[in-house]
Length: 220
Image 1 (cartoon, rainbow, N blue to C red):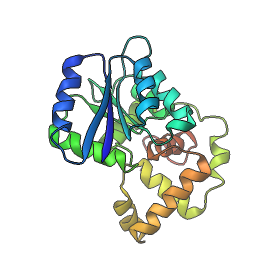
Image 2 (image 1 turned 45 degrees about the horizontal axis):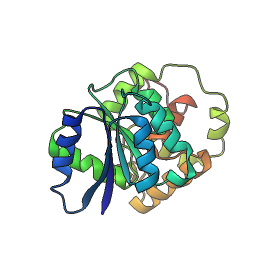
Image 3 (image 1 turned 90 degrees about the horizontal axis):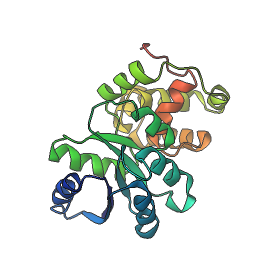
């Protein structure tokens, strides 16, 4: 059972998402909150698998709520998925830096919404190749983060290659095809890279890949 926490200051949005989720046998909405601070309290109380969090909220906004969830060891199993009204607004990259597993546009069709929840519950990032390319062009053309390049040196060649492919938005199966290895081996490379880089999830691997220079914005 996938346990979901809804955090959005618009009751109509919450009720709409809840109506979709409640129809699924493998998904349960455990709680709802109208601001980020209450969302944090409910996350600690219910320990959901997924927290669907709006960016712009009163009291504590979605980015700060995401940052606090990611920093709390007791909430290590909570995957934050940011909800946004636009495909790419100015806060998305900051949310990924804060520890979000990905983001969804609020006008997403129900089938894609349900698929995204299940993908996030597996620990995969919600970064489709098209969205990743937009993130690259709009948000990742900034100076390298101090220490990021050093972290890249801890990776093996195959792990480094896997991180680059994750940054291009590929799934484990697609990475396996590209690297001519089994999906299990691809997953192992990705997981080892996450461990070495202390990345919470695949979304943070994407951030690392560009901050460290493993992938260059505008490059292939």
